[in-house]
Each structure stands twice: as C-alpha cells, then as structure tokens.
Image (cartoon, rainbow, N blue to C red; front, side, top):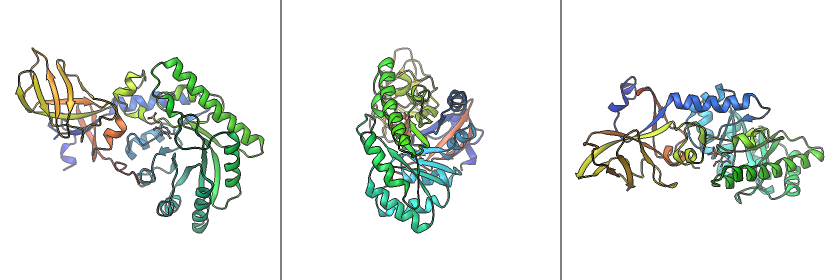
Length: 363
Ligand SMILES: Cc1ncc(COP(=O)(O)O)c(C=O)c1O
C-alpha cells in the first residue's frame, strides 16, 4: 500500500496528507549545518517538531552529534530509528518512566535535564541498579518561567548533588530562552536572548570556578540559533522547527523555507465564493492561529472546524470538488503530531513514505 504511491504525483494521494518537500528540507538542514561548521558550537536538533527518525538521521549526517527530544517516548522512537545520542531536554519523573529511561540508556547515549535533587537521587538509583551511565544536564530557568533552577548558586548546588552520584555523569547546563520567541521585534528578541545566554554562561563559569568541568552549555531555538549559537560559552543549540518550519516562524523573519504542507481536497462548493475542503483542525493545528492556503491565487482559508476547511474563493477563481490544495501550517510541531505518515516529495512526486514514529509519544 505504502509502496503503491512511491513515484506517483502528489495529486494522486488520498487526503488529508502531510507532505514534506525534500528540496526545502535539505536546504534548511544545510543552512543550519553550514552556520555551525564555521563556529565552535554545534546544533543538536530538537525532534519535537518533526518526530521523524528519517529527518533526524539526515541532521546527524549533516554534522549534529545527536538530537534533543521533548519526551521519553520521542527519545525511544529516535533510538528505535537508529539515533545513538539523545538529550531529553526535559525532566523525566516517576518510577514508570525512570524504569523505561534505564532500559533506553542500555541502548544509546542518553542525557536528561534535571532541576530537582530528589529526581537526581531517583535517576541515580535506577542507573546504578542497571549498571549504566545516564548523562545529566542541570536545567536553568533563564527567563521562560517553565522548568529549571533559578540562579547560579542553585545550579551549583544541584550540580554538586550529581557529580558524586553513582550511575550519573554530569554533562553540563541547559537553559531554553523560550520566552523570547514571541517577541516580534528582532533587535529586542536578540537582546533578550543574549541576556538569557549571559545568565546561562555565567552559571557555567560559576560551576567551573568551583572545580567542576561543565561539558555542554545548551540553549537556543529556531529564532535565536544565530544569536545563541554565536554567544561565547554556548556550546550547543537546540533548534528544531527550522527543519520543517511554519508560517509562525516565517512571519517572525526566520530564513528557513517552509518544507511542510497538508494536502487537502475540495469536497464541496456549496455557494458562490465558498468552497469546503477535507482538512480541519484534526489535520492541521490551529493553536498558533489559522494556517494558509499556498500556491492557489484567489483562494483563502477563512475557518477550520474539526474535519472541514472553509475557503473563500475570489471572483474569477474557479474551484471544483476534487481539486487538491496545499495548506501551510501555522504551527508545525502540533500539526505533525496529527498524522501517522509523512509523504516525502520532490518536484511534486512522492519519493518515500515515512511513518511518524514519534507522533503522539507524549509519555
Ligand atoms: C527545551 C527546548 N529547546 C529548544 C526548543 C526549540 O525549538 P524551536 O526550534 O521550535 O524554536 C524548544 C521548543 O519548544 C524547547 O522546548
């Protein structure tokens, strides 16, 4: 069934279907890799966006030492898909998950973020019992008000809890400046990002000054990769959305190409000026606002319900049931999560069908 569509035109695919344009994807991976080739830091791409081992393997082939995952389940999907080095840039808490983490460490080089001493103790017990070494990065809150310890003294205190614990290896500090991504004005965003990176690197120096070597100092995202990736002392950038992109990042001025669309079919043209297509919010996410119709002049997406897209058709434009349209998502990460497979496409033809094995892996 999967093989039946390979080599065919995307126009023959059933809909709704998630498409990945390989030319745009490869260009994005190369743009990011080229930036870091000239710098001491590296990118460790975050897979929470694409959730696809196939793309992760392309990113590693372009020079990344491994990837980041948001969840243990995503990390498992990546290791199953051949990735041998994963940073879970998040806390792994609770007996059931720590047991799964222990078996994952037997199969790959795994690191995890921590911000709590009891969690550190639980991770150490589990790693020791299995006779494995789990990498640990202390997460700092650098202004986002999400997870992370506050301040360099708190970071040092937690690092000290890690260094002598059996089963754990202290691998560095991380701090994600997610609060700056919503700042529209580029200069202000840059300044806030530098402030966050300053806090993170000062904490790394503080830990280092107490005789504890800090391996990675990890932060950054798609909108700040150039600022955080050039900041002295930052060794690793966790950008992820750059691979597939979305209109949200495009509108914020990101240089990467939109590589993902949702193919949809018109199913009804009930009134003059109106068409209805078969991709609703179960096929394309709306948490960052309405997505867009692309490459179809005179047709605009006006609303989404669960399984329907409401389109406005300008005078002079013609749309008929059965017509195929492409939608550019406003939020790539949550859109990918709605699909079982991605169709990898070049010049309008399906090259490969990728099961999105990290999809829905929120545990
Ligand atoms: C911990 C962490 N690192 C990095 C990122 C960067 O992601 P993006 O490339 O989408 O900016 C995120 C985004 O949510 C994140 O949560």
